[in-house]
Image (cartoon, rainbow, N blue to C red; front, side, top):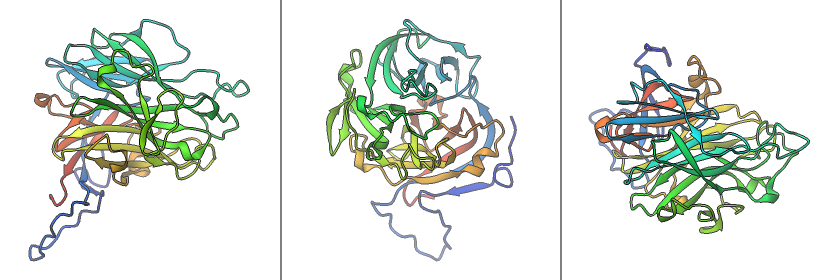
Length: 370
């Protein structure tokens, strides 16, 4: 650990926009905040914190009493635990109670009041294109655990792309289709789990970041229950249904110059009283990271309510950090153990993790707040 020189001098405060923060002279009157004005964030350098295991997707966390549990997958899920995100112990491999075609990356979790832990995984079956066996088309499954994720009972697949949406002639390095690279959040009324998913349909109009939901009451038997957001309604089935992306691609995922947001990570921010989404932005067929973006919404049930994504980190600021790899998988992780903060709950000050390590604090500001 230490204080990396990330942006010039350590502890230099980086003002990042969701709207540029401009300091005003005292004599200048402060404008009244507009209801359309978005929150803003500031990053500042911090001591290094690393997750205990290899990271190749979102890394969900939950509390059981005074113990924090964290999952890192690449693709097998490894579990660590500790008193906080700052003192996690050695990771241990978890296991599923059945076999599957392809890895199952645990990307999201929810600890229920009765002690059951629900998890959702990204699965990559092979082959999906016989002539190009390296390609896959991800799908999303559900699981549950009665031992805090040491073992998992697979509940089956819940979100899949239409069967005719594969494009095996794609220039994409990894995917020929599918639904994956996601997070899951329960709304405040405990009515629905919302899935924010990457979609890789052959038709670019269905590519980008999309939304699905499943009733909370169906959490133990979710197969066949989710509905996808399509043309203004929750009208399409989770398995094989169409989507209308909330953040469509700029350039088709199947082209060598693909330009798309992906890999959403969402938390409820108690300081802002809003949901906060972080996104990767890929700018070619190899998913080169262009930067990390942020968006805000007060209601996950309003897919059109997300603010336009704003960049908070450039590629150069990411890759200069040692061992950052491709610089994917941004996550906000709350640091207040007393409030049981996790990847799904954070306050005014939290940690920003990228690819399993954090060298930044992230500070959230309400509109008009300094």
